[in-house]
Image (cartoon, rainbow, N blue to C red; front, side, top):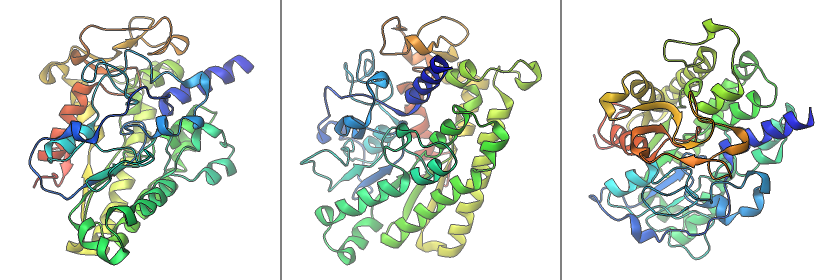
Amino acid sequence: MARRTTSVTAAAGLLILGASCVFLLSAADGDGGTMRYNAMFNFGDSLSDTGNLCVNKSAAEELLLTFANPPYGMTYFGHPTCRCSDGRLVVDFLAKSLGLPFLPPSKLPGADFRKGANMAIVGATALDFDFLKSIGLGYPIWNNGAINVQLQWFRDLLPRVCGTPQSCRPYLAKSLFLLGSIGGNDYNAMLFFGFNVSRAKSYTPNVVDNIAAAVERLIELGAVDIVVPGTLPIGCVAIYLTILPSGDKSDYDEHGCLKPLNDLATYHNSLLQDRLNRVRARHGPAARIMYADYYAYAMDMLRDPARFGFTAPVAACCGAGGPPYNFQLDARCGMKGATACGDPWRHESWDGVHPTEAVNRLVADGWLRGPYCHPPILQ
């Protein structure tokens, strides 16, 4: 039982924890594109953290420190950067396309945040840690920075960025906000620590309500343009397929994905869109709230990988064990025994958990110009 607990903790940690970073990028490295916004501010988890866990490395347990090891970062940076990918993330491509620099982590001392900041941190949840603790999920790895904590980090930055609350309002009205993806770790906490899918689904209203409440708080501060991504089809992700297999063949769809897990993701996304519609109705044209559809894009890539230039839709590029998933808990990417493929641009999954840079590039374009963001950012 002790060994099982350690393994599950490691699995959960791969989903949400990173490592000490050997290098944090200069904000100037991301310049490019056309300036449309004053700045961009991002909130989220490991899908968009550009270094906050590295800055706050004491939050990580040694057992889980893998993301700062090669071959992370191999495709673009040539070394690990505390990004959970082989290269750039969606938020990096968005910033470049909008003429903004790579977003510095909000916890980076001495950084210039006038063109944006990244509050995302691996391990982030939509639900507060106290709530998770109240339902028996009070493991420290879920306490890195819930969405309410990230909002406080953002409020703490504002005096250095734009001055008083009143003077900040016009500045924030001309900035882009990316709120998520977040919520995935809430389900990781539940599913990897004993909850079945039905029980996890019972907390989905709490998860999406917290996300919608965060949108409201940003609007109160002066935000106008806010992108809110849904969650990925987790039933098609290697770590879930490895850790939570089913003995019932009918639980798998024609692509080998676990239908109950994807049903949870679609329920989350449907409920989230409902909550966002309510926020839109309350604020009308004073707020432009965009729903970014991670799920639909990922499923399109999975159904027809060749159309997008991929040959391996599920198996991890970096890992161990070979087909079908190339994922092993004790030989995860960045650990002894794991190796990386020579063609990550042909893979959709980098480490069995997070997408490759090639996927992130496509997702960013789909959100900027459509059809996977409603409305598109650049509309």
